[in-house]
Length: 378
Image (cartoon, rainbow, N blue to C red; front, side, top):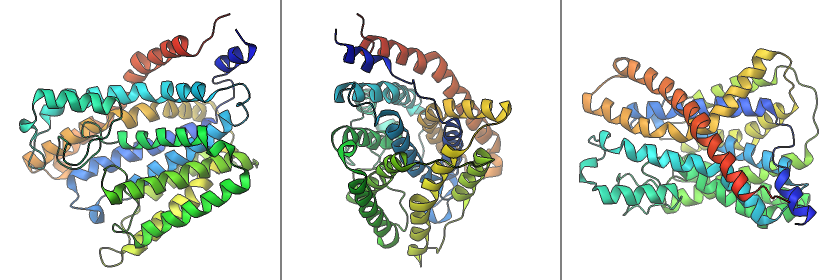
């Protein structure tokens, strides 16, 4: 057994985490839950509450690029492409599977005027479950819910598909680029994202969840700017001392997400410009802020650890219950105040379920897969 293979299998998680970035990821995940909660009361993006919660995905992509660059850029002499892809698969895919299973288990309780689940046969549901668990996107004509989502059992899985694309691009192309070339790529992708946001069909970058032409273009541009931007930031990162970074970053994420829609239907470019500023300027700055900050008290340390542990499971398990909540609100014709007990129960229940999945499923499965596929015995 070669020494290099042993080293490559053993180095996982030997670098310290940026705990503040973990905490900010958790805050962003909570804003996503709130954004999705208010979908039940919106008629379009124009009147959605927590209006820009979808931008959390761009923050996740930048953060992912930064963390991947920080963790792996200097390890390619002792790590193969296969090893890297295995590590990312072990880290990400168990929650993709459980999210699909949860989505399937509550599917028949989600019937409403927006989608008639009674028309979906059990075999069709099983096929959709396997496709979602394997991250095989559904075409609009095959999608069982009828709202053109790639993953109708657990909508947020679309961003994991793009995350996997980012992983493959990094393994085969992006890591090999010089810093100058990577900078040019980020600049060009940022211009493309800005053009899509400002002059595109939506006046925003809330795209990527469907296999339609506009969604694939928008989702691709979101990834092609944000993930390489995170990689670039990891390469050029030079920390400075910043106090209160977690609290500054958390408040910023909440405020950015909650800003109402700008410009209305008459001036879509205004909201597109806002989205561009958030994705291209504010979010890289927040990642830099979080990486620079130091935790100086035990309360903040525990909070960041909890939020960081919770963030990915919460993102991946909450949405099936959003479908259920949406159906309940529509079927009963409820106002938000009338549905408030259900909304509170959904948020608290999703947090509890996410933590349960983390401790009883995700961590044990990842330990098993790591031992089975990565640890090399002498």
